[in-house]
Length: 503
Ligand code: ADP
Figure 1 (tube, rainbow, N blue to C red):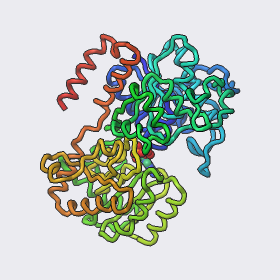
Figure 2: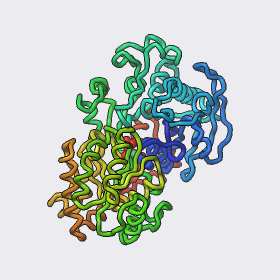
Figure 3: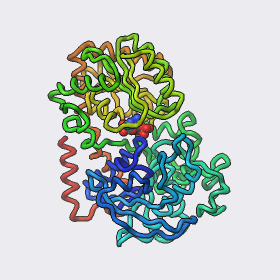
Figure 4: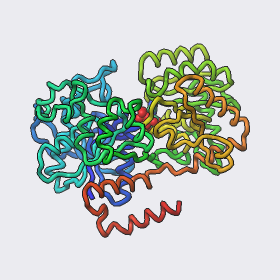
């Protein structure tokens, strides 16, 4: 089975958040299962530079006023997953962010940039490339939301289409008048089409016209159907609820492995975590904190955003400092939050350390050198940082919502004795909620044996893609009616299933 994963980012080519991690790790896991999965993404400058074995590929048909676009073929470093980058200098070669300019303003032509990505995907879907034609196009988030609509517009044989929602708050809403020039005629712009509160929504296009819709955790899939979490899409999703499900994200257990992570001063593993103390001292130095192995370090690595409860974290910092813990923060995002965090670091020198910016190696070090990780969120489709934390023996403190609720098992007498506890959860979107989890965590931290067991449980949990990728395979099989595996692949699959069962 051939699957084309269409995405706006994939680690390490281009990354702004968890979507990039999923977009590189899922196809790698699918390929291990015998699925011929490949990636299509925009040819940002850094993506083209980082591609392994880049070579010029097919010239794309002139469309949407762009006549110089072509594909650059290559591979993901590390995993070797085949990649096509859409190379169009006017759309993607510019300095700034993936979606925004240097001042944090959305690029004025985002509708055109990502409509073009979708048209390119559909061209591959219909005509193939060097004899390779996908059976399934797996479109991700609003950036690829037009793919299923464009496929539906011509009822010729076409690949099946799965659409995955990584965050309902990002909707790709643009003026309706702009759509005809993007290849979407008026007949698709009504309320039963992609119209959404007076605009055209690429996210709605993805939901309305794909064969199946997924999101990235079972709890978020349920929450998305409610007015409180649906971001205006709850009714639209309820109408498609037969085709909608949640599949929990996994993590790349090779990229995120404390026993061989090149970003750590000393590796460690579940049986001997002594290296974690060396990492902790490195974090304390990096963030300007007093170097002391007994003082608990609480990490926070996150987009600085309302979703991530950064405002509540900022409000809670003085109280956390009063409890005798240190806080190390790595993040970027909302400029007001960035400024407030810097102020907190200045007024709590040596106790609160803040690094504003995006720094992948430092994110790894922070996960390894912290004792606890704050991962609060008003809503969280899946969340990856709490999974990385557990793998690194760092105990997560999370709000009980979405994928956080699905992955972190709260400490209680019952879960401690059953040896299933992995972290601390809370409910209130307010400092008292977050601080209740911090208080409980700091109390258990003073019981080294119990703490050690908690770390071990997190480190031993299986958050790999192995089992979750199989759920996607089942889905692809459902939408195509194809046997997912050619007969010669069957032994591989059987072996995988057996090894997963054995684990
Ligand atoms: P989201 O995708 O909503 O931002 P996730 O928890 O799913 O949240 O994924 C966040 C990803 O981005 C993780 O890989 C995390 O390590 C990374 N990340 C977030 N902020 C930073 C930062 N400032 N520097 C480096 N990595 C970051």
